[in-house]
Image (cartoon, rainbow, N blue to C red; front, side):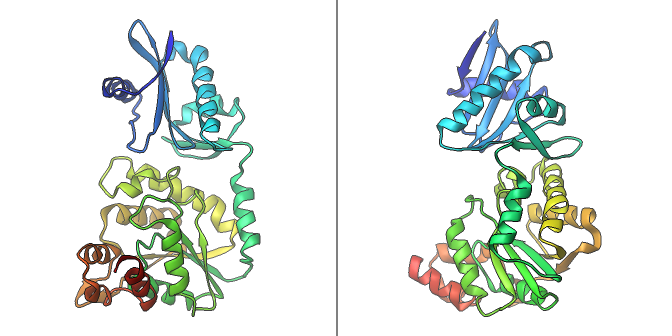
Length: 322
């Protein structure tokens, strides 16, 4: 029984076939994989995406023998790459196994479970953000946005929502898997709403639409996992974000993108009247979208861009891309 690092495509293809038996996939964001073989047959495998453990499966006859070995090897790898905590995206049947190795459960559905190491706690993390950003209010609403980049459409939704609350929190996705890096997206939003006194822009943490909770979101293509991932994300928001940030309402923009539209549907079904959908803003009979801006930017059509973004975003794009 040999523990091997999967490097070659032929090895990864064998792992993909093995995972299919357990209704698991070898995700595109996987960056490290090990596996165990006996008589040239894979009997167990585990992978990571940065500090997230995923694609973990062990043959039934070997669970007690090799599961701990695979997990321990993976934790060592994560620490060696510079992370001081780790999280797990796995099947509910493995919850007890990970809990026995000092993980605790964040949330689980009938098909997927999320856990993390005990030196990192979602409640403490979110409460820390709440206190640090001074988000105390009895009438708080929120929006979760990517803003890739920040457009007049985003600004319109924020303005509409802000009128209903003493404080509106705008969570900007921290995941760096968009055209614009998080720090650039965050800066564009902060500049773009600086005149709105009751709006607070903060990072989303990796507990909202992230590589852990919703990896498919960033691929922007239809996938069988969209519903399950969207449900997990909605469950985390309901269990942790609503009570910790004392939220009264979450706002969404109406969507054409299929992944975001499905996510919005799951949120609405799960959270009901807590969710309010705001119709998107149009220009020249077209919905304003970040994708239109990115296409115009790629073609250096700055005059066209000026119709779709606030001056703050326009100046930022001209400075960095003009």
